[in-house]
Image 1 (cartoon, rainbow, N blue to C red):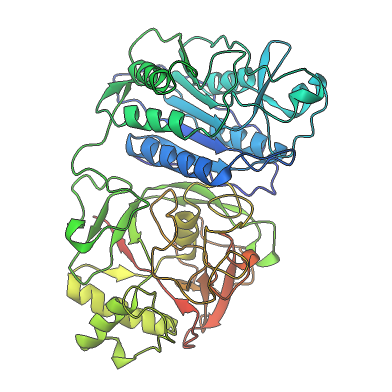
Image 2 (image 1 turned 120 degrees about the vertical axis):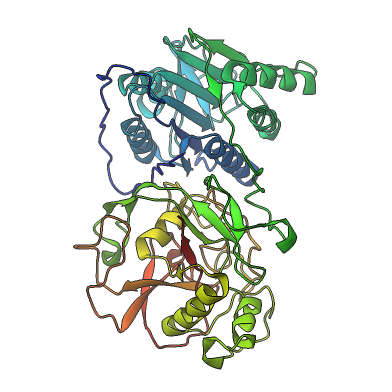
Amino acid sequence: MVLLSLVISLALEAQPGLAQATEELTDAPPPPGSALVIDNAAYASGGLPSAPALSSAQSLARELTRIGFNVGIAANLRQNAMRGAINAFTGTIKPGSAALFFFSGYGVEAKGTTYLIPIDANIWTEADVRDQGISVDAILAAMDKAGAKVKIMILDASRRNPFERRFRSLSGGLGAIDPPPQTLLLSSAEPGKVVDGDSNMFIGELLKELRSPDARADDVFNHTRLGVARATSNQQTPVVKSTLTEPFFLKSGSGTPDLPADAKADAGAVQLGPPQDAKPGAVFRDCAACPELVIVPAGDFAMGSQDFAAEQPVHSVTIGRPFAIGRVEVTFAQWDACIADGGCAGWRPDDRGRDHNDGPVGEVSWSDAHRFLDWLSRKSGHPYRLPSEAEWEYAARAGALTRFWWGDEAGSGHANCRGCGGAGLPSPAGSYTANAFGLFDTAGNIAEWVEDCWSENYEGAPRDGGVAHDGPCKQRVVRGGSFDAGPRYVRSASRFLYDAELRYYTNGFRVVRDLP
């Protein structure tokens, strides 16, 4: 299934672009479903525990990808960004497809309507709720207007929040939601009830049921409801409402089960050669000494940002085919294998006291990277290359709508950089959590060469994910920032230039292999 990543610049004001359902249904397979996963935790008026919630949202995004949805994931969205993300999501819904919307954060009922609250909300009255929140009814209506045959909504928003006490005596939970036709709704608690604590148990039960093969969606939700009620001794009972008129199945993938995207697999557990179905998230390697690869799906995204001139203009890019990319940056152990085999021109970078096996290799030039790729291609029998700049950013964002794949703020514990809680040296590859595509260390640790020639901005940049050859090709692009860079330089959109022959201690690379 193609994963259409809803990657947009948060600085842009997205405009509604809702597709009209005008085509007659045929016997052809339905188009792939679209999904948007939003996790809001860093509220200005009092936040939720963000790390566990974000991890749960990422796990849900990965599971929805596995069963065939085109997933976009976003965290900690302000009002304009949240409206823009929802507009972008509904704009990608294909007539006759399924559409799924998930929200974790605060929800408030006002005048019988449930509103989902962005993180910058400043709510003191019920009128503020209606003005600053986004109504569930409006989201469902937009999904319907876009032509979704089946609308699925999952709400983890029945929480005790800091707003209602300003104009009510207590938190009233969500209001009763009357779903429109052909809708399936799951809410974490009954109307008027609130849940104290985090949502890990609710999401955990949902993930467990989603992994049931070829399950009907209403069965998944009802089993989730029963599991939560049982685990809480009926203190928390989710609500399931359905207006579906025919069964809707959540089809699971076939073939080799996926390895967890946030767990490093050892060599014995990774399949040799790509799986036959080559589904997104599948992990393989071509030989024992070859890097582990993860399959990244095709899709569209908006490349760049408004933060710096070199990242402008933000422009739409289509990645037309899935490709395989290194789960981690090339390590010293893999570089040493190249040296031992007579490759890499015998260059031995200084490890500077860091992990010489699992640590990412640094102090390699763009030309050195190509010498490794030449050796790896001969060793494996398959052509390897550097990613294009567009492929790199697409894989690094992994469907995220925010400056970093985990949110808008760097925080601590997500990446190895100065100001991110890093140790001031490169970490062993894969030390931090993987993004939703299963890639580690796309932010910080070691900066990564890509194939493109440097350009001062994105004017005239390729729109097909290809390599930019215009500009001073003696200078090539480096992405991702390093352990020695501050948070602003490890954003998904950040880009830099270095001379192609320069061996700098913070620069390394990861590999790409095209699929048949």
